[in-house]
Length: 93
Image: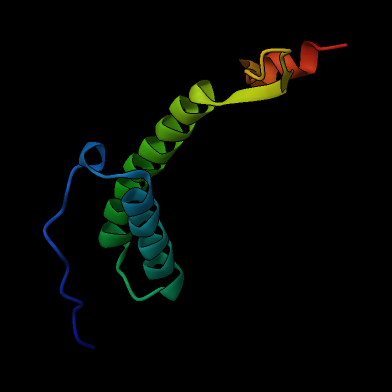
């Protein structure tokens, strides 16, 4: 069984959302293959948690930047309001 060569580890904080998600998917695939030993599986799992936190944090930031288009004013300007967070959406009537 040949060992896979891996790129030098990058800190999750240095990666874009797409890069972190790609690395997370790679780790999941490695774990699902079942060829890693217990210690290596645990190390990959812990690494995956870092990438998951990075993805989650970037998604939260993106959600705060998104606004809902609620209409167009008489002057032709877009009317927007902040995108409701999950908690706020549940409280809406």
